[in-house]
Structures are given as structure tokens and as C-alpha cells.
Image 1 (tube, rainbow, N blue to C red):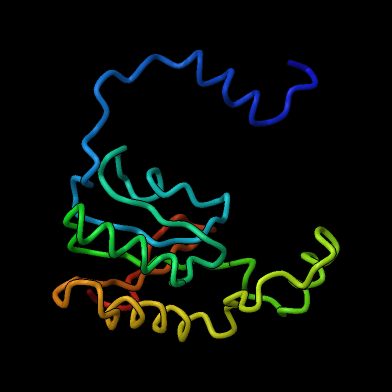
Image 2 (image 1 turned 60 degrees about the vertical axis):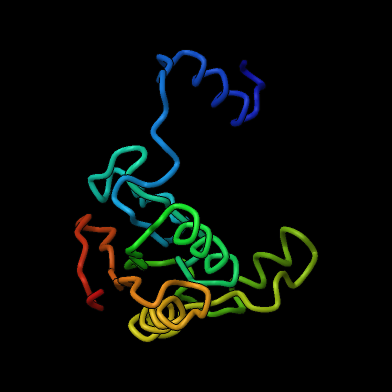
Length: 165
């Protein structure tokens, strides 16, 4: 396995784990969906004290509420009876930088400009509020859905509620 890819090593390591037997049911036990950043320093289950099966977790660059996040939330709420959403942004986010830096990195890696809208974070408090508002005002989500805006501090590991649900 010396020349194995990272994914091949993951699959091999997985084969050494004990089997889990019956999996948790698909509906999240806490009727919760978390929207957060893909930052590798954030391990949602561990950082939030959750177990497998407690919540749906949606991740992307910046933890932004995109059309695809709203699509997934519609399924979470409509099919799996989710009643609360925590939009969790974090300190020291890689999306809080000049857009030109990200575009240059994408151009170097792919030769293209990348997506039209990168959903950069220019004003962290405002963007968190915008993302919470996008969920709260989405026509195809339940009107009584509780939506929270939370910030995770990557240095301390602590959560801070900025917008009450």
C-alpha cells in the first residue's frame, strides 16, 4: 500500500474497523441540520458533542447557504422532519480573503476562473446574517423552522450564538 492513494488507504483502514451492525435511522434524532464550512479543523460531530445519526451535516466552502444547501434543507425538513437549522460559520475562515486570491488558486489548479459566484465572506457578521435570512425566507422550507446563526472559534473550539433561532 506504499503507493496507494489516500482513498485506497481509507478503504483499507475502514476494513479494519469493527462493523457497526444496525445503522441509525435516516431521520436525524435531534431533528437538526447543521450547515457549516468544509474547513478540516472543524469536525462537526466531535466539535458539537453529537453522535452519528443525531443531525444532518451540510458542508461547503465558507458554510454558505447556497441553492444546493436550500435543496438539501428542503429534503431534510420535508422528508426527515428537521425542525432546527444551525448555520455555523467560523473564525479564521479561508473564504475571508480577497476573491482574487481564490480565483488565482483555482486558475493555477484548473486553468479556469472557476464558479461565477464563490460566495466570499467579506463581512463575517453580515454574511452569517444573510445566510440565516436565506434559510428563514426560503419559500419551500417550513415557516416555523428555527434557524440559528452560530460562530465556531477554531482556536478555542467554542461556539458563540450570534443569531437566536
